[in-house]
Image (cartoon, rainbow, N blue to C red; front, side, top):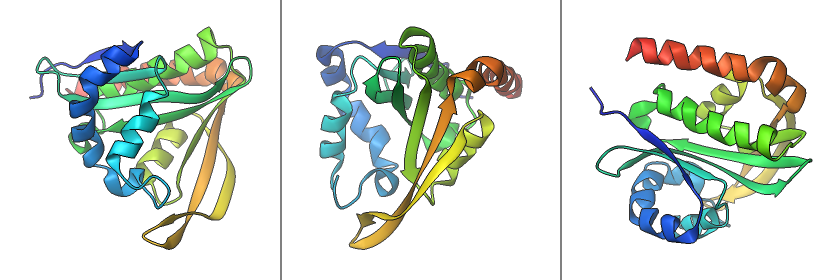
Length: 185
């Protein structure tokens, strides 16, 4: 059985720099999904992620190993934010993944009062698609050949969670999913 994970919000660059080596461990498991010809390395990705502070959350164990994370970027209070998330393959249905996403969504809708949160990802990313379907996101766009990986074109999709759906359904749905996941532990 896995030890409990703590969800922490990263508020400043000092906290982020302390996480950097552990962050690369988590990111490396997903390099194929996270890097493309425009973001070619994990170091570039980590530098990009640093720009999301203070809208960054991580799930870590007592040994400070990172297992999951969520961030918001391109935040325009009152308008929109983009949600990005990652979790270690061993904890796909762990409550920490849901808690991390909940922290980001609560901040976006309740603190920043955005009208919608967008998720943009590789059209072949089944995990991200499943997350979006599970929590009430709506597919808004499918961009053909929008990025390149290994010199080959790849499609990108954009899914959005609207404030009215978040308040009417998603908060309750996330609480229910969290209850189910904890029951299975």
